Image (cartoon, rainbow, N blue to C red):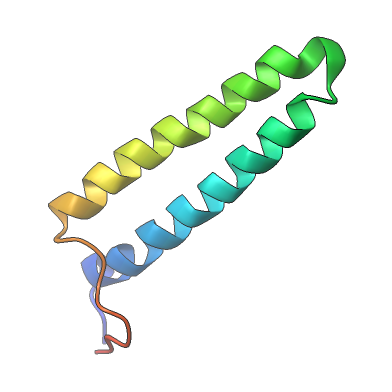
Length: 71
């Protein structure tokens, strides 16, 4: 059975990928948001900063697990 730390090493890259996708979607929609544009762009920046923290956490845990790793 995989340990919680091993699970995190799988989840963290997945979360970063989703954050990147959402940030890009936010940026696209911000251009259509009129008065709310700045706030939506700020939210995209927050997601990108979150990814920096998540990536740092992943590095401390030894990086992503190789594909096909099972316990």
